[in-house]
Length: 352
Length: 213
Ligand SMILES: Nc1ncnc2c1ncn2[C@@H]1O[C@H](COP(=O)(O)OP(=O)(O)OP(=O)(O)O)[C@@H](O)[C@H]1O
Ligand SMILES: [Mg+2]
Image 1: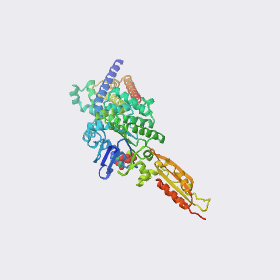
Image 2: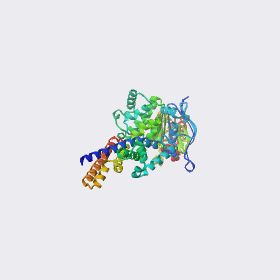
Image 3: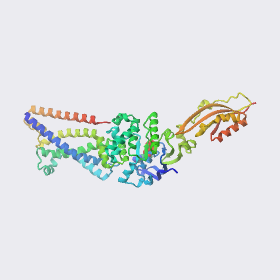
């Protein structure tokens, strides 16, 4: 059984009163396991920031409990709360670095706060700067850094007190795609290196797809869908989830392929254009060659694409199957038995 | 004449310097408390905030010349006299405290809320946030603001001369105006302008130098 690191039970957060009343979180319950990268995705205003800020009590929910490593943070106050917060790192969309301190000073800041000795601070900061790859920027001020470099400082600062949890509030939303990739790589690296539990919120599906193990979809303050990222891609249940998926998957078939007519050379043959979707390891198996050998059908590959959800391959393939009707049927059955999803796009019956 | 001028210059610098230091001593903490007790700041306390804000507004709305006279009993109580440079420092300080408080407020409100939140998320105490975040981040703004206070104090110190405080303002009125000494008048004006120019340039330069944003 995986160990639960963070648990939210029936958390409700309401802002304002009367006409201005907004239910930002509506009875939210979640479990986040130790060592996983947990993504929360939702549209603007869905309540993502509110949710993540409740985890370290930057916002106080009206009801419900939040437990981190067995400790109920919703009950903590003052000194106890501050001590627990040291074990929860946080990074932000706009980095929130101290403009008056250098890279070194910013990373040293949480250590000073925690009362670490000066000599130890130096050692720790230098190793963190090395970890995030900013050794040549050690005495630069934030204003002299690029967005990606600032976020690296943010990550180093968040890791300074060896936290068990890292909260990321839209950590890559202010960055270009290339820099986003490198920051996500760094997050994945620290996740594996320190078995760090990472909670990240985003409105970008590619962030979920690239590094998350588990995802929760939030809509109007409610979690509408939750589970392993691969499952969400394989079987999205809500329209919101489907919309987010579309943004990263080329589910639309190019028009040229759709409108393409199947022309058969042999009038005794049937033909079908089939789309095969797959997720997971099947991509590594020689399905197509077995198909040709076992069922004596002709296969013509029209279109193919392959991508990865974290480390799981997924993709789709469009092929023409040509041969005797029964053989085509049998071939399709075989493909479905392999765990592939089939969809017939076009079909031609023998004319002779 | 040069002796008179030098003496008056010394008195002005003394009055302005002393009241600047004293008003900063009281005004900076006052401004800090004003800011951190705001709703959604690090120590929200609406009642305290409202009371301080009202007091500061009253202080800011009194014209200096009226304040000067109105607090004479208080001045006597503090320094034993209401005239001379010592007698001028008290009203100058009192009027500048509320000014400093507002200057501190505007400098501190410039700081991005996110930076303060990051410190809270790290587990910093209120004291640590003040000393390690609010003040260091506000330094350039504070320097510019205090420069403004100092320039104002130079102007007010001339009025304080009216109650026998001495200084350049006093000199220009007694000699330049009442004894028709145009040369004294001109000279004091030149010196005053030079001081203000010098002070402002220095303050702006220092603030720019320390600004890392
Ligand atoms: N301090 C606040 N006072 C009042 N309402 C708030 C406050 N913070 C958030 N809200 C409201 O709560 C709802 C959820 O906001 P939240 O910031 O959690 O959304 P989000 O999913 O992070 O959106 P975004 O992607 O735009 O950052 C919104 O309707 C917002 O207007
Ligand atoms: Mg947000």
